[in-house]
Length: 191
Image 1 (cartoon, rainbow, N blue to C red):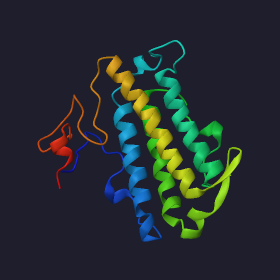
Image 2 (cartoon, helix red, strand yellow; image 1 turned 180 degrees about the vertical axis):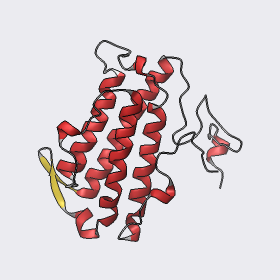
Image 3 (tube, rainbow, N blue to C red; image 1 turned 120 degrees about the vertical axis):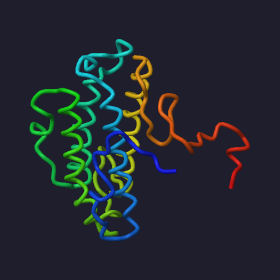
């Protein structure tokens, strides 16, 4: 059963074909993860940008800025993709709509770079902070980092008593006919 999102920022038709067929899942996953992030961000209002559930936690606005800036760093510094200057990365005014729009625009611009990657390019070792890793490893580390912050903001939504949008399946707030959350041993054993 395919999930339907209220907003799909990057459609399947928008995703270019990878130079090597095996890498198509990389582009498809990046577009899908971008859509999931945008869906969570869209549940916030500008009034929520200063919200933090604990004094030592980041605010919603801090997380939006971090996500946009840290993706720029991963793709520019570690993966070697062309990126805007750090000073030109964030929207002029931080609003939920502006941050979401900028985040999606930057992701769209990265897709052709990822699509052009050859096997040698993906497997090349590149500097990653104080070590070296293959580009493919750095890419998946970025996806995991993004998932961490998306989950962080999903928890904030729950604490604000707001609906949590679906990402990899239904949530307590949003489901659909045919959704199968696998909450039993019997469901986990289906073939």
